[in-house]
Amino acid sequence: MLPDPPRDPFNNLDPAQTVRVLPRHLAGPSQADLETIWAFPFDDGWHLHQGLEGMVFAISPCARLWTRFAPKPEERGADTWTIGMDRAPFGPRAWEITFDATTPAELLRDVHTELLDLYLEDRHSERNHLVEDPTAPHEVYTPLLTHGWSHSVKTDGTQTFLPPEGLGGVRHRYATTGADGPVWRAWGGYPSAPHWQAQFSAGAPTTLAAAFTASLISTEPLHRAVKQIPFHTRRHLYVAPAAAPQPPSHLPPALPSAPHPAGRAR
Image (cartoon, rainbow, N blue to C red; front, side, top):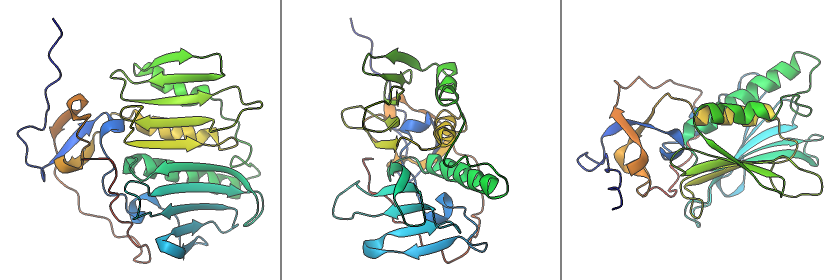
C-alpha cells in the first residue's frame, strides 16, 4: 500500500493570511519591488535609468556593471531580472546572470547585496573580483550537501544537487571547455515546469552563486500570504504563524516599484 500524500498545510487558512514558510525554493516570489532588490547608493554615483517598455536599469558609476528589471506583460510569468558586467562601458558582455521574476524576492535581494559588496571591495582596493573571482566552486555547493541535498554526476560534465523533496535543484557545469550554456543553473518546483529559474553564465563571479545558494538554504522563514504560495508544491512546505510585521523602511522615492510578478504561483 502506498503512503498517504503529505497534508496540505493551507487547507484551513484564509488566502490573505500571512505565514512563514520553508524551504525557500518553494515559497513563491512575494512582492519583488525595486526598493527591496536594489539597495544601491543612488546618492553616490549609481544611476537609475528608465528604459523602453517599462524596463528599469541600475548602472554603476564605472558604467560597466548594471542590473535590469524587464517586464513582459504580454507573456505571463516572463518578467526577468538580469545582472551584467561589460568589458568596457556599454561594450561587449563579460558575463550575465538572469532570474525569472518569480524567483523568491529574498534570493534576489541577497545576490544584489553581495553584488554591491563585491563592487565596493573592488572599487576601494586593487582587487578585481567582478572579473577574476578566486572563489572555488565547492563554496557554492558544499552548503547544499550539509543541508541534506543529494548529489549526482554525469559524464557530460555536469553535476546536480537536489533538495530532499526533489522539487528544485542546482546544476553545475564543471567541464566548461567547448560547452555552451550557464555554468550554474538553479530552479524551484517540478523540473518539467519550474516556478522559477536562475542562470549564471561563464565568467560570473562564483561568489554571487555562493550568495545565492546560501540564501536558498537559509533556515530563516519567508513571509508569504497564502494566496502567493504555488499551489502544486505547497504540501511540501513547513508553515509557522507569521511574526509581528515590521514597519516598512523608506528608501529614496526615485525608485519605482516593479509590478508584482504574475508568475507561476496559483
